[in-house]
Amino acid sequence: MDLSCTEEEEAYRARLRAWLAATLPGLPERPDPLDWPARRAYDCGWQRRLHDAGYADTHWDASPTQRLIFLEETERAGAPYVGANFVGLLHAGPTIAAEGTGAQRARWLPPILRGDEVWCQGFSEPDAGSDLASLRTRAVRDGDAYVVTGQKIWTSHAEVADWCELLVRTDPGAPKHQGITWLAVPMDAPGITVRPLRTLAGSTEFAEVFLDEVRVPVSHRVGEENDGWRVTMVTLSFERGTAFVGEVVACRRLLGELARTARKNGTWDDPVVRRRLGRLSAEFRALWRLTQANVSEAQATGGVPGAGGSVFKLHYSHARQELYDAAAAVLGPDALDLGRDWTLDRLSSLSYTIAAGTSQIQRNIVAERILGLPKGR
Image (cartoon, rainbow, N blue to C red; front, side, top):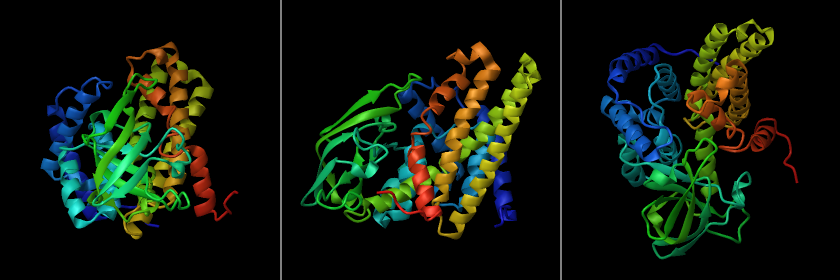
C-alpha cells in the first residue's frame, strides 16, 4: 500500500500552507469556548473564509488523501477547529454527498460549505445509546410528509443548529435494523423543543431534543424509507474514519508541548514520565500511519471509509485519555486549573470511549466485520 503523496497532492499542501500562514494572523480573537452562540458565529466565519479561498469542499469533494492533508495542515498551523460545523462538515454533509439526490446536494451542501447553516446530530435516545438500532422516535407517513414524535439525547450542537440529521423508526413491525429512516429536519419546525445539557466542563454542546408531531417533508429523506440503517453506517464511517484525523495531529503537538513542560518543571528527570511520553509518541505515530492506511483504502474503494475506522477510533479514544492522564502527571496541581485548555480537553477526553460508538461497540465491529467472528446471541 502506497502511503506517499503525489506531486499534485504535495503542491496542494504547499498552497494551503501558504494561505494559512497569510490568513491566520488576521483572524479575530477566539470567543469563550463555553459560549456556543459566539462560537457558532466565529466557526461559521472561519468556514466562510475557507469557502472564499476555495478550501471549503475538502471534506467531501476532494480525494481522501487531499482531505487528510487539509486536516493535517490546518491543525499544525493552529487554525480554528470546525467547532459548531462539526456535524455538517464531517457527518451530515459527507453523507448527503454520498447518498443524497441531486436536489438534496444542491439544497444542503452549499450552505454548509459557506458556513451559512449549522447541523446537529439526532441519533441517540435515552434507551438507545450503544444499541442505537433500538431507537423509538417514530415517523408516520402522512401524504407528502412524515409526522415525527419522540425524544433524542446528546444531540450535538442542537442549541445553535439550523438542521438535524435525525434517525426515526418508520416501520415498528420490522426487525430493528430494517425499520429506520434518515431524515433532514429543520430545527425551527413547529413541535421541536431543545433543552441544553451542561457537560462536566461546563459546555452546552449537547442537548435533549423533544419532537411532538413534527411534520417533515418526504423530500427531506436521504435514502429510501426503512433503509436508514445503511445510510447511518455511511455517516458513522465518516465519523469514525476521518472526523478525528485533525485531533491526532493536535495530540502529537500537545505531546511535544508536554515534553517541553516536563523539561522545565523537572518531571522529565523521572524515568517513568519519560518512558510514558515516549510510548505515547509511538502510539500517536502508529495512529497517524493507520489513518493514512484507512484513507488509502477509502480512496481505492470510492471515498467512504471502511470498518478500519473502528480500529482507529477504538485505539485513539484510549490513547487520548492516556495522553491527558500523562499531562496531569506532568502538570501536577496545575492540571486542576480550569483556565488551562489542557484541563478542559482532559475532561472532554473522558467521553471519547463513549462518543461515536462506545469502545465495546467498536470491538464488536472489529470482531465481526474485520476478523469474521460470529455474532453473539
